[in-house]
Length: 285
Picture (cartoon, rainbow, N blue to C red):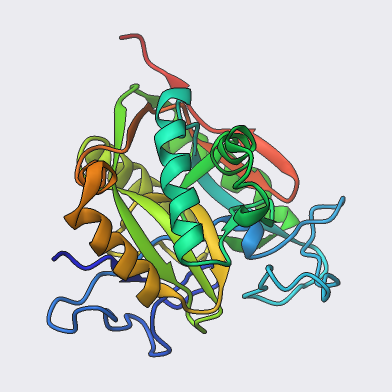
């Protein structure tokens, strides 16, 4: 059975399934270590206040973790592909998340800090809150930059990624990720087929821009994905057991083996503090 546990590399916006330095070993199969993965959803890592600076005052909100210190004048930068899950597959995905939360309690909808168990009695709310919002595929690390770097960074990203062709992205593999200090677990869907080559090239372009600004580059072997749910602590083992059990039985289990949903590439965005910059335009097809 293919391992569903993968690990994030240790970085300012990364997560891993081990306390070891980069790259940590795979928790599920030490003979087949998994490469480091892109960071989890940005709002679980930091929060930007109205000025766009990191806000470290949210001590009463344990779902958020700061992985680099606040420095006055720094802005949080994040480059990503926005993803919207089509309405049709949301229903089946919501059923699966509902069952998953009933077997492994403590899951929350990504980015909104809403426990899934409060949504389980209303399937429509579960679909909309957990799956009906804009999600994202990371194209670069989440990094702090100085205000005098912003214009150059955004301009160069647009130069590198100015014209892009539309393509289909196939989200086809459920994965479980755990952060470096094992305080967060993420339920995600990975891109392993259609769209992987295109996204990898886009990551390489972002890396080139980051390097010119003395910013940390992305992982050598990126694993593009979206995250749809998270939980406190390391609950990777029970989640893995549920996934493996569902693979062996029932229609839901068979659904885990096929494409979960497909989405058309919908552009690239760069968030600087609270401001979102559109990075690319589409070529004529």
